[in-house]
Length: 210
Image (cartoon, rainbow, N blue to C red; front, side):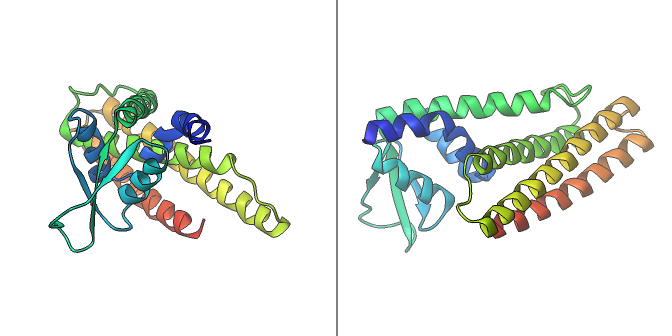
């Protein structure tokens, strides 16, 4: 049963990673290249929830701390199987994010100005998070009529936010075309930043209510 559950979860693990903030995600990225490294997190954190679930299917193990770094801290380490599946999930997340960033006209990672890179990184993060949330939402159905209505409303809200982020990506392309350091380019980037702030805020509200 555990293997069946693992086989079911593994292909979609990247969607869970897409919901992590940059700090939480970086802990997982560092741990897979340092076998047996200790991963410490607080009780109730996103990583705590993820790693606790992974313990049940043999991908992580909890390490008892003699002297906890924090009063409410927990420590975990990846197993060999966990490192393999997490490495694959991180690679898939990177592929998904790269594919979304490739849609931004004129954007070249590694050579774009810092102002453009910062905005594009936010777009990549929000886009993959929205994609993950949509995949998860479409994979579950409500059992009641009332619940079905709320679920449909939630899906529609996510899709509307995703369209807003896509519009922001197009605006970045316009900024690049105009020249990021030109008056028009800076104006496009400023508008895009405000649009992403709004999208981030609305996404937080919808996620809290889901």
